[in-house]
Image (cartoon, rainbow, N blue to C red):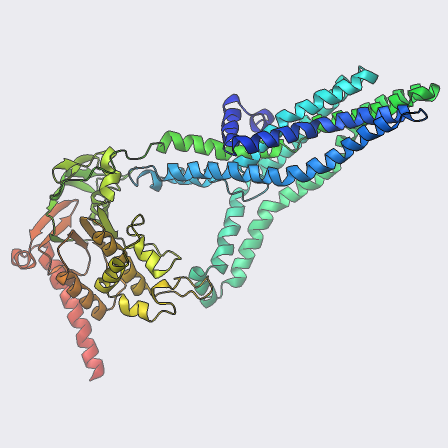
Length: 606
């Protein structure tokens, strides 16, 4: 990476930063630009006023020059106080708008495939623009730095004009010196940046082990296995591997500061010496000396300031990541979302599917249909493709071949988001939101959270009411121990809450209820009570039950047996047992293990 590539923005990148800047609001942005422009002019104006004041000493009217000089000093102080909070506000607004765009794009994909792509995940992480170290800056910081860089030219021009009045050749000389300093500092900083970037993986390693030691989920194993000392050594080793070269580079930079000082000091000293020589021979030219000193320093500081290059360079990765995301995931909202799907069966027709880079298809011509209100069980060995079928039915995956059809209408890409509003699901890795129990359940239909009776009914069907009654604030208890007065649920209780959330969605109009191992965390008694209640509830939605516990699918209207990417067997429990195929073999094997387990228990009790 060259210095020009890393710091000098392209025209497109400048436009992107201007777009970010515009999100601060026209009024606020205009106010900041005006104040920054005035602030850039004040050093040159102060230099001219100082020279005028010195020249007016001994005359009858020095007060006008003094008033101008005082106004410049007070103005500088006041503007600095005004711009500091205004800068923070502009930067925050710009960054918020950028992150809103990232969030909108992240929610745009109509399938789950892009979000499972590691490259997309890296782009989302980078585009979100949460600086983790000194090399990273938000797009808001970059936008403000770009504005300040452009406005600074006003100050450069003003200072050069004032200096040219006294010594015409001094301005070009100081500008060249400032350019050299900018070049040197930029090269030094880029070396540090390259060293940091090359060792960034050590920082990620240190952060991982630091979180492992302090996060409740992993902290218990750290304590049980006595890993604290070992993790401490890992963290220290990773930090030293990343930071030792950076610290050594920082020491070198401190030594090079002498060179950075001498580069402008030599031409400044030359200009000041010549001005002082003329003033020594002609006392009336003391005002010239004063003006040259003040204007020369104002010119150098205005042009030689390199602080803006850091946020400009540091904001580029987030901007580039956003542009890449827009190319890969960009898309508008589902314009057909409000058009309802016709009532009817939910079908997969000739569906084939393979994961990226996989040599073999997971699904190889699946045909199935679920009628309205029908309860269908889906079973099969691990890796048979059950989870893939679920995600296709939920509109999360797009089949390589074949179609998802609802009520005779093909669920196209344009209609996939609309279809998902008709689906409720309990996945194995359900989400545990740090919200109240009621809010957790109402997220099944986040746009319709006014029907409290639906929450109560869903909790009753999921067997969650006794659990909520024992909570400190009942259903309004926050379900996280990280908050005051909050609490947590057991794994089985969380699974009951996830089921209540899905049932709340069914009450809100979902026509397909997908249950993926809905009783995996439940004990045998709670599981039996759950499925007894599920069998008694109204058939207001088709139900697809995926489970390894074959006893739970006995009451389903139909059972589908998935094997080697195809529906190998289909029928009721009794019909499949009579067929004496794969399902019968799995059921007898599982029943025999349960029987052996209970026999051992009886023997121990005897």
